[in-house]
Length: 405
Image 1 (cartoon, one colour):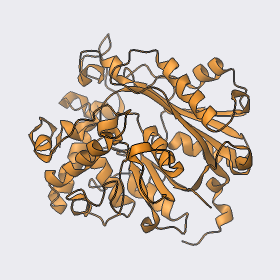
Image 2 (spheres, rainbow, N blue to C red):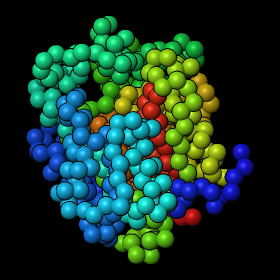
Image 3 (cartoon, helix red, strand yellow):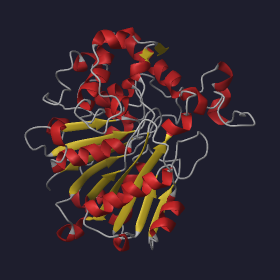
């Protein structure tokens, strides 16, 4: 595909600041308070004030079901910070969690806003209380008055399959069947996450984990075990998306948005996608690489969604870091994806060990790495190019980020 670089509209946007609240397994703090902590940290990181913010973007907006899935919406944050907005958006129907950030990139490029506050907050850990993850799942006993299945759930809930753990396990099993992928290979994604979390002071799980530990833990849905599933937690993440021309006024050199990918060319379905060994990441990645002259070999680090470990493997293949069906051999042994490997992966510990911040944590980490602010887990060699990818199943959004343009 040929293109005019001037037509790649997302290049008119930059990421100027990033912030997080406290992160914990169960903080039992007001979720709006956590959200505002992250938002104010991101604004300060960019060297801005609340008076500079004229846009808000979030995913998914206020939701009461499932419990803890959303800590705040646009209205909550706008009112609390007394923001005057020229543009805003929030909703569940987006190309993955980072779709809200991609929307902000397009908004500032179109001139609808100058500095957009993008945020995502969760309090799933506290919402569970002592009841475990099933307590906040549809059909799992959470809430009151029962649950009437609608839409996709009409076909899964009657068979006790309300969780994405079951749907993604089906895809992983097909990948195992077609390409000979093994649990020992898949486990390297979880082991790598735990190694990186060990040097992340904000990570939920930092204790060491061996391959025997991984193989010996209880199964959730074959071939996924407990350690293949992300860790519910409480916390909030925010980033500021700004017009590129504001760079001289910012506190530090911003991160440039080189290209984005949001495409969905298969069926919008978890179980009826045309190829069950991959996901919508296949389409989003193809679109992203069609919008840049950079290639996968230019990428210095990859922060890729791991709601379940197999989703990361699907992203690795989709983004061209290895061939289709070659995800197992690519991660085998863990050397390639280690912090000192050819493709440092999920350097903060991902959601498997650092905590399920639902997509935004990957973008936050990519920015810290490119700013060289990641502390003990910093990738060596002054990384120049990174990717942040989020979403599983029929949802996918990806950003290609560069330190310089």
